[in-house]
Image (cartoon, rainbow, N blue to C red):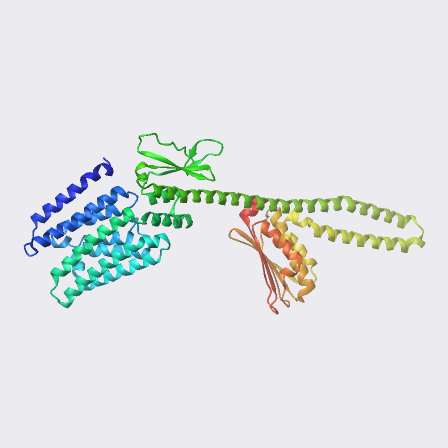
Length: 533
């Protein structure tokens, strides 16, 4: 048997229980009028709660109000349970209109209120009661100030009700502490405030702006971090329908699937469930399948559907943006890899083409040295010197295109050769194994460009090049003791290398205070680089 079937029976059962308790535990000291008022307050709480539960099932206000009414009657049985109603009453005031506590302060206050209500010695302590009433007022103001727009307008009645209850609670404590002998007047004020709170909140729930507050809270929730659950879960919490299903349109078909990719069946007529389509620019992008009882407030369902439609469209836009970003990143990666491949082809062509021709010329000159008369010896020697210089320049050019040591043996041997050729002392530290080709090339050229800049501009006496693996990254740093003041934006060399590193998912940092040397650090994620290699 479901709660829906039991709900109509709860009201007469609760009122009958209240009537029986009032008769069985009648206190002559209170008199008939106070007893009738006490019974009336409990009935108001239960009836208002039942109406709220039926008309606004999306909100938890109804069940909480009925719980307050039941514990109100229960308090007539014995002193230890006299104050139990305070817990649900305060929860009602701080969680209206949804019945859900959104702030941490409100949760703490309600937790303290339930403990106070359950332990009679605490509830009878007037100083603690004053503290509780102040905490309730503070939490109510905090919750109200934390809202804006329609939600703040809808929170006005709840704030007024919470402050009124806190005031009458404090009034009773002050009356007992001061010894005013006004117990009967305070009791009537207490009963009147609680009954008025129930009636005002019910009227506001039925005819006020609570739906706008719910939708505003949903929009804020949808815009917050995704650790609060899936879109379906957040919609289910907002509408109070745990069985709610959000189906997404399958491209090219008429079907829908849920978050897990399972097929969503649309409800049959008479099943007690219905479907609300979510349209975006006239196209159906999703479907809400929910309890048809939610249609009692069609405006709420349509507003929630509009918020969900925005969220679905936003998720689609984000997915499209991520796909385009990934495509752009892959395109940049392919350009870097294509450039490296072209560098390798140029180097190989120089080695196999021009290099072999120079070797042939060298052999011909060696033969000419022995075959020609000695009068031509100086001319042959000059040709050999020119040939050696050409070979040296060709080798340096080929090394600049892509060093053979880099592709054949890896980053560390290539950097070792680079350090030996540098015009200033270079200390090479650290070690890494073989890396993807694009990653090795990027780190090598960053170090090469940095050393070239040191030689040209830094007036440094010493340079330290360090390469290390740190977690999921490989980091290469070049640090000199020169004059500093380098501006990476003023030259194209480091900017181009920074673009290359960025394309591999890394970044380049340049720190160069005047008189403090220059530090260039390049870091590239190993995982990304492995995938890109």
